[in-house]
Image (cartoon, rainbow, N blue to C red; front, top):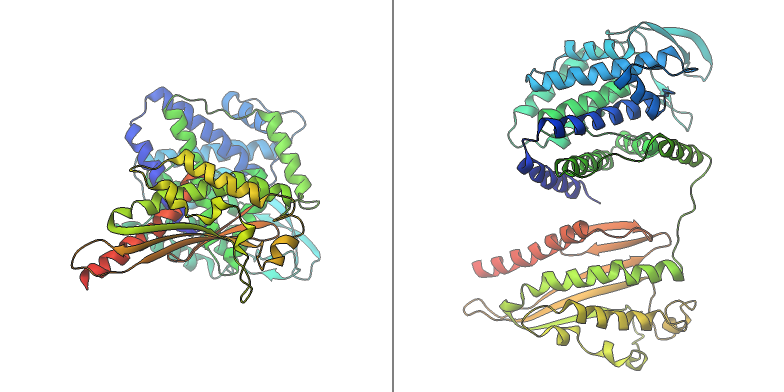
Length: 485
């Protein structure tokens, strides 16, 4: 999924939320308390804090400490909560982002000077180093990666200048009227992490500052959930390797989640999630992931059957809807489901039932779109494909006639442009669906887009709508270019 899709979706959700603003004081207080509790719990837990969600809630709302848990964890949690409250106040009063403010946040979340055991570049334990609060690091804090390589952050000597450059960069970007807040916040988070200016607490500060930027622009915070820790760090590692899109997309997805939660709250719907026990179950699942990957649903008869009868049906219907909008401009249309065959091995037309020999457009020739009729035609096609002697029986039947079971193409043709003084031309738009071992892949040739998903993951209506709109826009642009000629 590309970055643009997620950012556009977030913008649309924010527009819906803005229409409901201002919220009542009670509604806003309830939503912000929920976000504040989640933010405190997850951001601290990502860094090893042992307080459960229930213990975090008891500490923040009632001042109750948990027996048997380190006092350090309580101090960090209460300090992080103070940092969030300070962020809200700074945003409310429109104060600028400064290095002094960043150092103040660091003092709040760490509370007091501590010591932390270090590992040298050759993998040996060294003396515990002093963790100073509110000041930049005085010794290197490079880390060893899973492959044994050392990943280098800014040196202590470089840090002050790099932090000043970061603040200058942010201020310049913020003044740009075209800047996208999610893109800016994500990039700031990553740039800050690459500097790693403090001896400890860099991850929590990075997330606080990222959300500070989002909140400045009227967005809610992006809350990275502890059970999604591996995806978060994976996206950061991909950015380290030079590909920042996965990280920006990841942050965008989390903003979308929070926007959806805020919209539910604004509409008076329930926003509370399963309680602490379920969160612990989620944490257990996260720990199990560290012992090995969860079994993926690979391509087989059952997964393909479910895909045919769910996602592909939705894609087909929406594909027809979008393309049929152009029917008024042409004299003829044709729609086909194409099952590719190898070159020089023409398929025997008799192997397909009569329903598939006809153009599906014949069933769409009325003045408006008969969705139920399309589903009926489509399901008859699927029933044929799902027969034991065809698509799934080791592919022998289809291979006999030169067909490949690895892809299907939806093709919509428009013939004979029906407008005077423009010229006669035709257009062909298609969507190809490829079936890999673990993923199915949709390819949109005109707009050069591609999306892949696991077989058990259904495409959402928003995703289908987004990609097909892009494809339809190419058709519209093509007609407009013809008009210029």
